[in-house]
Structure formats: C-alpha cells, structure tokens
Length: 240
Length: 257
Image 1 (tube, chains in turn green, brown):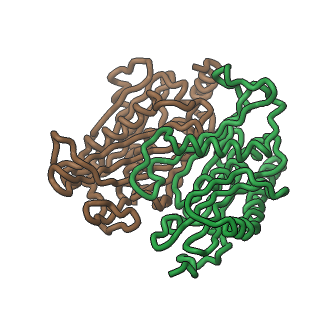
Image 2 (tube, chains in turn yellow, orange; image 1 turned 60 degrees about the horizontal axis):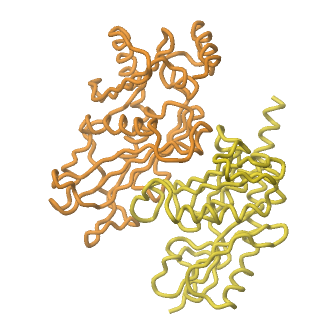
Image 3 (cartoon, helix red, strand yellow; image 1 turned 90 degrees about the vertical axis):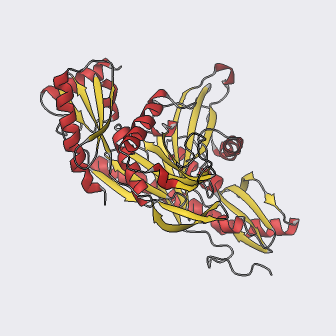
C-alpha cells in the first residue's frame, strides 16, 4: 500500500509550523532560534575570538567552528548520553560546510567564530533546523555573509515525495523511505548540504528537490523576518 | 577574580542596592513553563532575569545495581554548555557543573522525595532509571537553585512511558507519575563583604566570598547543605544564611503547582 496521504494531514510540499527568532541568548554575540514542528534548535555565536590550538590557525581567513549538541532528553528514544558522539561530530562538520560558502571571514585571520547549537527536543530534521538557526545567529552576530542558508529535509516515503519529514515518516515501517537533508542558499539556489539515507531513484531525488523550492523560500523569509524583528526592537530601545 | 567588578558590587551593596537595582533579599522576576519538551517525560523551562534554563526528565528502563536489586535510580546532571556563557568552554564536564549536579541531586535524594523502591519493575532485572538533566541556555547565575526548582517541577510533571514487552515506548505515556512525598527546594545565599544576597547573578556569584546552599522541605526542615567559596563563615553567619534560605524557599513554593 503506497503512502498517499501524510499521517498528519499535511500536503506533500508543506512544512510543519515554523517559528524563527533572533537574539534569544543575551550572553552571546549573536543568537538564533528555529523551531519546525517539534524540532527545536537554539544557536549562539561567540567570536571571532582567539583560536586554540595555534596549529589550526588559518592565516588567510578566520575559521568557522560549529558544535552541534542534542540535550540528553531531546531524543525520540532513550536518554542521549551527554558529550560528543560520532554522530554529533559529523553533523558539526557538515554544518560548517553548509554555512561556509555564504560566510566571509577574511577580516579575521587566525581567529575562530564559534557557533554552538543546542537542541532541547527533536522530531527528525534536527541538522536542518540547526543550520537554519545557526544562519540567524551568525547574521545576528554581524558576521559578514552574502545570504542566510535555509535547510529542510526532503524525501520519499513509500513512493510519495515529501518535504520536512517528521520522525514517524522517517521511521515509516510499511515502505521504503529516503531521508535527504538539504541546505540551500536561497538567493542563488545553490545547495550546500546534501545527505541521503534510504532508497530513491534519480528521478525521485530530482522530484523531491524540485518540490521543496517553495519551502526554502518560506524558511528564508522566516529567517529574514526574525532578524528584522530583532533590529526593529533594538531601534525601539534606542529611541526610548 | 575581577577586582574592579568586586569593588563596584561592594560599593553598591554598602548603599543597600545591587547592580540590577534589586534589594538584597529580592528574587528576580521569574516565569516557569512546564511540559515544553515533547521528547522528555517531564520538563520545565525557567526564565529568571536573564537566566534561562531548561530541565528535562528522561525515564529509561534499565538494570538495577547489583547491591540494590529492588531499587530504581535517580540521577541529576547539570551541563554548563559553552552556548550559555562566554566563560564556558568545550570539553569534559567542569568541576562547577559537577558540583551543581551533585548539590541538586543530594537535595532530592536526602529529602527522600522519591522512593527508589517504587521504581522497581522486576527485582534484580528491570527498574526505572530517572534522569534529570539541567541545561542552561543563557547562564546568568544561581544555577543550583533554578535547576533544583525546575528539576522538582519537572519530576512532579513527569509521566512514565508505556512498558511494552520490557521496553519503554516513549511515544505513549501512562497516567502514572512519580510519587513525590515532599518538595525539596535549594536556596543559595551568597556572602559578599558583610552582606547576604539571594538569587545571585553570574557577576555576583563570581565575586562572592562564600556561599551556602540549603535545601529545605515544606515544614522548613533541612535536608542538605553545601558551603562554597574560599572565605570561612562564622556560626552567626551560617545561622543568618540558613534562616534566609528557608524563608526564601517557602516563598518559592507558590511556583510549584
């Protein structure tokens, strides 16, 4: 039996409810919040600041360092043990690769920009939410960027191309699933993160990506609105 | 320690005010949301001034310790993630986070609020393992008190997952909660010069001469204490600090519904 209607009533190309905010962590130099359905990501930027150890210094440009962390109670199953895991390290790496193409750190050679991402709860799509939150945080911190990266998972669930899979779809039991996290530079349409787990044909992949285009624009809009709201609030405070 | 900051805080205290305008025995404005984390069995999100902390309770099924085959387990962990404050770095848990975890943990354990024997599923084989994780998003002081308060609220909210063939099904929760026989609340009093303050900010905490965390239950009885900081305390100091902590804890009970 093929998957015709999504279990939560969404249309195939419809994302879950999105909430985006900037400036949520006062101690940080910049911060962002991105919630999509029950997947929630906070991002905080510190820096550019001094980079240890020295042998990692890049004399040409500053280094972007992401640290992705799931809170112990944020998983769908048992408690997640605190501390870095193979999974969290890999996600941190692909996040850096997803964000670097829009980031210009040539003004701060030898320094590091730290982006810390914490997830209090997840319902699939956590690395995409993390990237979307990190983009807001970096823009909020005043890091030189040419756009904010928008990310969402696309995929195939038992023959149906869908956008923004939740846990139930990702773990669909009665048919093949392809889970494809994607990050896009919305102004150019270039893709900066692409991973896939599962089974899909070339045609299906193309269809799934094509179908997700409005979702990327929708996320980009939410990110821009978050930054604008943050600066409107700051401007209001200055006037007072 | 930042000497200029210490002098600044001290000068203000001599006039009876704190840098944020509070009285010495005044708590910051506080909001508490519960049940915000869908993946946790119980949760509480406290914002107190600029302090912002999420606490989640996760209840797994596990094997009991060999020396206590009919007891479940309770563990509190606090993590000072580098997101929450520029002073924290990546790496293994700092001594500060270990102390905070253990002080909150002892308050709940020694109050005997949770009967670990009631967490037994099958003697010697399966028990509920209750984990309380304290995660500050923006750290502005008083982690022990706010983590402890959020912890007890999250424990009170928590519901056991459904047990299916000896495995927990975290997508279905039962109506069974954890039975709490009392509600232990930790309150930290810090001493700066000759002044005693409650609900210290990060800056106040960093210049404190000494601190005393006192956990008390409803009838004002004490169940755990921890002195911190480098300076000694006189018996008279301790008397004042304990009295202030117990009085403050009573006032905080209105936040537990």
